[in-house]
Image 1 (tube, rainbow, N blue to C red):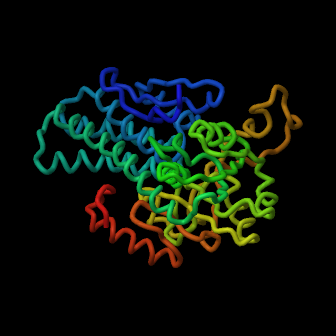
Image 2 (tube, rainbow, N blue to C red; image 1 turned 90 degrees about the vertical axis):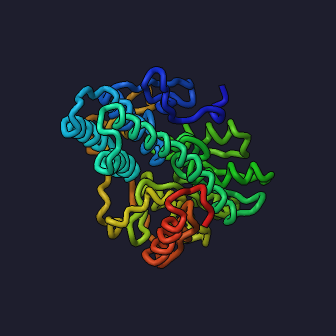
Length: 368
């Protein structure tokens, strides 16, 4: 099976299940998981079986609809209370990725608006509302990533060398991805690029996922260890760095997979532009700066034992294992959104971006 021909996250209408590619099995095996209860969805997000900000958001939206189908209360207040409880539970799985809370809040708001604006005030009507909103979020993700690719492609030329970190590719969204979208859209236009993938310690998303999907797509791909980025930059092999992110603060600071800030600092040394590719759903204007972003810390076993046949660190050693770091806005040449490219000063640029979004009615398919 070609991984590029299937959606990373989708809804199985007949089985009332969220179907995902289990990314913890890649690249060795392509396996699909059918998620039907709250614990399965929570674990899939927490254990990174589904990962990447856009994919997490879509999974959460589809998942909340699936779980709503299991709520039997016919009274709205009772139905809402059950739905809110399970939504809060799903939201606890990954605190840094704003798309998770964004998607769940959007589903909740949709139901509230439907109910209080006189929609069919029965369980069937509530489920219909949630079903349509979940599928809208799914379809929008595809359209948004396509637009990200079109804007991002304008920043690079045919034959350029691009460096990526972690996986902000097709596997991090439904299709196209975020940071890889310019590559895929550029390829559709007949362009070719040379891509260097950081392996991305400790979970190796670059080695296991980005290298895997780019190779499957026919991209000229070279895998490097994280500490090799300066070497390839110094040789002149890299023209631009493209990364995704899990949260953008109002001042343009971005939280992305651990190691991104190091990469951005090295790129500054070699005068290579760093572009963060982020749908507007990832921009959190309620967060003033990167200092206010909660950084998830993960289990020490990911550093000391995972991927090794034998333990690779002494017993009892202290481990610091943050999942993300914050890249200062001063190191970022531009933030690519589906409504245009934001540049410093970001607070002003974001206002223009959101004004354009409002002018389009929030529809990524409408050109502004």
